[in-house]
Length: 317
Image (tube, rainbow, N blue to C red; front, top):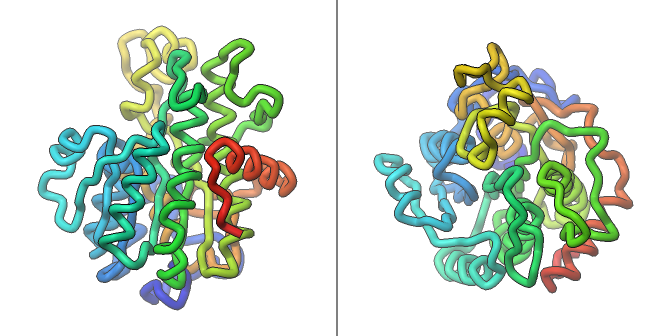
């Protein structure tokens, strides 16, 4: 939420600069300490594992009602056992019919949506085709969230001051959208596909903020930092050793990984911080606006048009 709906905690040292009193080792609980989200509704995709689970716990702990869409509802309910104000709904981001059904159920039950955190994702998976032949990482990490945002748009605009947070990764200057073959039909590279999907997260938030601002809906993309979670399930130990993430015994590289609670700090900060008023569309890390990320609004608009053509959804304007 923006300043007219977020509790005044007195913590606004970076109100005009997009900075905050928090940093790389802050936790989501620390970010939300003193903030009352009672009466607010949040949706956190991936909200039952890793960073998403930590974000769900923190938001619910601050008083928000958190809806967690899940492809495996029973697994999600087990993970969220004991978390008050969290509820699970079925959703498969790789299936547009499932996304549409979730949104229809949500809109029947709730008039407003204050926070949407798009935290669900997959990384470096074997080549997989979903829906009408879409590459799975682009579909799950980007297109599913693009569709979800469109389909719950009435609730976001009705909130009056809503925020959408797109969880990306550490930006790479060599990331690119494969415009001539976004579905990797002419040779699959799991890391190039992952990078494309994470760049799409950043570009999506940038363009969504431009379109949503007049309706009181602002969007941000975030880098949660390095967190060891089930996201790495498709990687072998050998790959992680070669990357320097773990040693031969499986021990994490010193100082590399954050806890899920630390990883959730920037997403929940982006969802609630008054310091971000006036910084819509920004790419954030360590609870601050960074100078990184793509600066080409044309690429963001081009991705939006591509996504609209693929999903058939383009009514945010």
